[in-house]
Length: 525
Image (tube, rainbow, N blue to C red; front, side, top):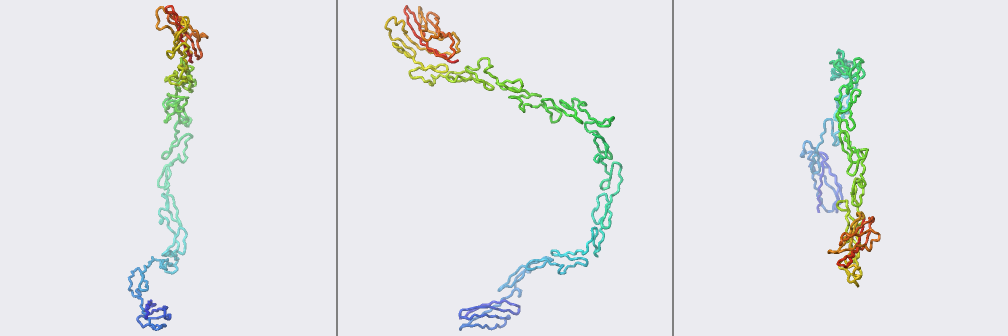
């Protein structure tokens, strides 16, 4: 069995290198071998324990491409040898005044390393990447050092641009300089300009050196000034002062549209009541008083004033502003409403009785509700509904014994026992219904009765045998065959009457009796 070991080594120097390694192989003794070799010379024999085995050691020498110059690094790169190869590292270049240290450019202190070139009398001061040479001696303000380090005066007049203002001359002094004004002669009322180059006017008004009196205005002039009176004043030569001008007297009717009031130095326009001063301060504009609503209801603006008026149903009170409601119900001539007038603010409305009436479309008259026609009554099936003003009545038309019903409102006698009864018992009983209001004018004919047909020679007798106990009704014979019933007494309250009107007809010597049973209903007006 043969074991092969490969060992690589690195040169220590171009002439000599060494190898140091340790290894252990099962079945062999462990060995540590150190070789000191020279290129291409014989190798010292290796001694290690083995048991009937042989070991072959092959040695390969690493080539240092950086030494042999067989690398491919660029000019700005540095060659670094590795086992079996090399690495090119980019070199860091530092600017002037700096040096590379541990891969970082650090400032070179030329003052410490004494690489500066400062002369005698100068002191080296290090700066980043360079140095400066400073004078060891400091000069006062206005002096500077020459090349020998001496302090000499600075001529500011020649070295400084415009050290003095315009109109001044620069005079150099030791360590400083002075500015001297240029001298110029000016006439009265003038003085030299700040630069001394020309003469300019003196503003006596602004400087307060004028002699204008109280109330006068100073006006500057070239080389002088003038005193004038303020606007609205004129100079009084006698009193030597400014007096007010009354513009309203001087220009009557020309300054203001209405009233001119003089004021010190001016005037003021004003307007009479109902007008306001316009924007121009002279004319007057009508004031619309209605904008502030001075009236109780409606307002009409007129030129210089206003007029209040009221809506329909109101009248204007004596104060000219307040509106009062008109009570049409109490002031109207004639009847506004058929039943009742109710005053409301600004108008009136008509009312009807609470039951049995409805307001007609004209809003003034009440129309009766016909309960019988619309079926709102409460009469039984055996009763007859009769409509009256403001209500209805349930009437029962029953026929007496010995009579038969021939219609809804008529009964006829069946027979009579003897001739005497035939003359006194009604042959026919007929029911009538009449309705009147309480305001009916009396005497009023309310019913007429007579035979139908009538013949020549007929004669009738009319009476009210029942229902007229209070004497409200009376009868009258109009002719031999016609009679009438009258209401001759005023009925002031609603009331119902049932009266029997009897007519005895004398025809050909025989009396025949007819009975009209009349329901009279007096309703509320």
